[in-house]
Image (cartoon, rainbow, N blue to C red):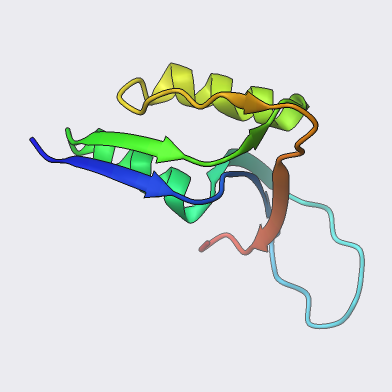
Length: 103
């Protein structure tokens, strides 16, 4: 079996669902929320592992609350991806996005 090495960034994506994307600046109450791992290289390593491939992710993940939560989630859900050591004094990126009910 070939092994795949994915090198890049990892992030924690926060997705807010809105009933309608506003066309003018305004405050809108979100109707849904999901949180998931992000970053192209990190997601690619998960995809390879879920397709029964051998995947490793190499990237920096901070030892802050977001990095700890992301690594714990990946350990619980994607056991085929090798664990990532946490880096001291490095902060994980968090991204927010809005979407309408159709995504």
